[in-house]
Structure formats: C-alpha cells, structure tokens
Amino acid sequence: MPIHSGLKRPVITGKGSGKTDELDTGDNGLNAELAFELYAFAEEDDELTFYWGGMTAMTAK
Image (cartoon, rainbow, N blue to C red; front, side, top):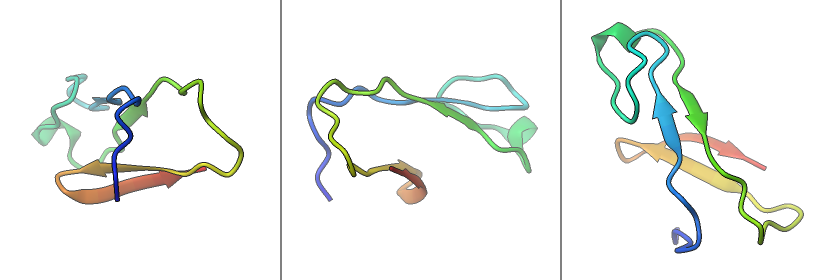
C-alpha cells in the first residue's frame, strides 16, 4: 500500500518508559500512545493504517 508523501510521521510514546518512537521492556504489556496531525486534504471515508515493526498496529477511519 502506498504511503502518501504529504503525511507527517506519527509520534509513538511508550506508556511505561515515556520514550518517543522507541519501546522497551518498561512498555511490555502496555498500550503505546500514537499521535498524528490530521492532514488538510482528508476526505470522508479515508482510512489510515499505522505500522510498527513491519506489522499493522492499527487502522482508523
């Protein structure tokens, strides 16, 4: 699936470690926080898929 060049990278924060864009053993078993800037060219029914370590982390509409 293509990645749109107009999108900014999301920021991942570990709930245990508090580290940004890096998870460690302090984050085991905890959900991470994902934050991103909503893009101005968003359209109804757009879908965003986020990946971590090459695997789908979440999909949001």
